Length: 381
Ligand SMILES: *Cc1c(COP(=O)(O)O)cnc(C)c1O
Image 1 (cartoon, rainbow, N blue to C red):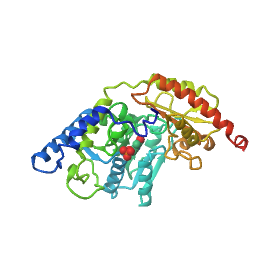
Image 2: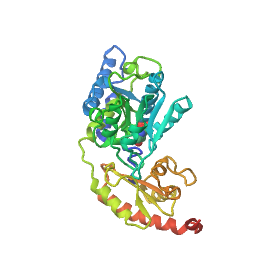
Image 3: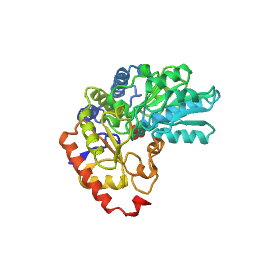
Image 4: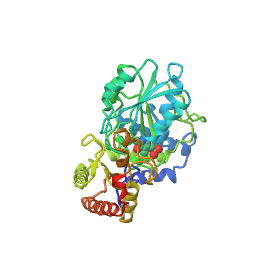
């Protein structure tokens, strides 16, 4: 079995999640909008899933909108608020290290006449709340800053950001897809108006997520059709997935992540020559170890590790050496050449100390081998 260290990309389905989903994939096959007994049973499963998720994050069940995933939740938050508020103003503020689901939605809105401010970040990838305060104008209709970064694991000062938004009376959306794997998002403590979630980053099935929408928020639906999800997201509800999502979330919060394994990985790899940690040293996701490594292409290293049975990531969507380096690393001020050598290792509940030790020695060996075979001009050019 491979050592799977790519939990930030997707996490394996928890056995109890599959078990909870099974009845809804087999005998409980009704449409949750049907009146008959099968429909009512499906509706009950959906209602319970919604209540569980709402209860875990301290929200009301009516404030949870199920979506097809984190991407759709981000799209619904940004476009839904932008279109609903466009008569009042057309200015949106986000950060320069967001997931593509936010970045590319903002780019689309820019093409449709919205103005987007991309806040800079410090070398650890953190937004300065006072810079956010300075960027807010009378025309600002939404702020969107992620709770935790998917590439480098950095946690944002989310409650401070929420407080700034509240003080200026601007709706605040946060992409908490990564953060939500390690503790419930807290709409009230964060003073968040909208929060994007996804099941498959916390041991649930791929293809379901949710958007928390604070009661009273004006949101234009992005999917037209039936009256599901209180008319905010049309389409027959994916009951089995919703049940799996709720089960996975509850299971996640019963665990304490093993930060000692992550710290061992960080300590050992940053001890190698030309390897540096990316993201914040302490304010980071408990399972995330990310690096830039001199003299290699991240994609080559990931391929080499795969041959040795270790599944990792460069941390960005691109996997081949020739493509653009990560916008996150560049925003953090990392040199473009160095940014090509990114490696992200994200641990899961099944990761053992032996897995970590093997990973350390394999990474060391692969890096040495790749450097030795690299064209000599690369270093001086
Ligand atoms: C994975 C991820 C998403 C996208 O979620 P999907 O459910 O895969 O669409 C959005 N934001 C962040 C931070 C993510 O890590």
